[in-house]
Image (tube, rainbow, N blue to C red; front, side):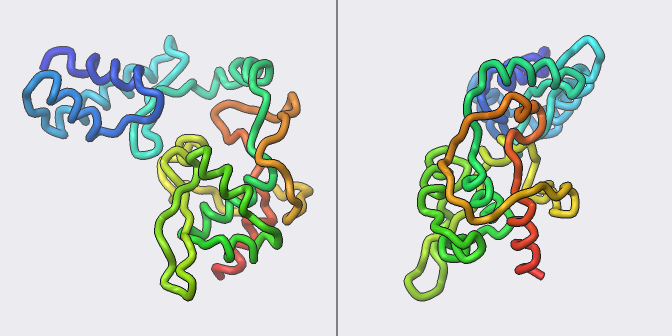
Length: 218
């Protein structure tokens, strides 16, 4: 089909979140009432990826969260970071990040397991993470009381800029900051002017929390 890449480009540009190959195929087939082979779509997507690697473009086509999305290239992160510092007021708090990091590395995980690792109640953090759609309920455990099990969502992968959970960093990849685990805090807090950097997580993961998670798995 003529201009197939452009039609796909328009879909990726329009969508607010990463769009999957299946969603692209479904939309095109309904629009043009014809079948599109996966190979055709893959060829068009490859063409778009190569096109936006050219220096005249400030953004590129990235495969992320099981879909495709346009993201700014690293060379322009500082400029965008300045803008975000000027316009963004809040971020996930330390308590929320600690809870989210445990869920990410231990999922599926129950609230009691979360609280055993953190040492404090996680009710408020879980509630807010559910509201923000970073965490979802995966089901119930086959244990007494059948507690709810929590896991991360595709929005979580989109938020942190990873393609799949296999891309989560290992604790050894971090430099250990001064941090304390177990301190209760609101789900959101003001961002200091130096905190936010585009293209990288806009949150600071608690390394001590991750170390506890890995230690328990070992």
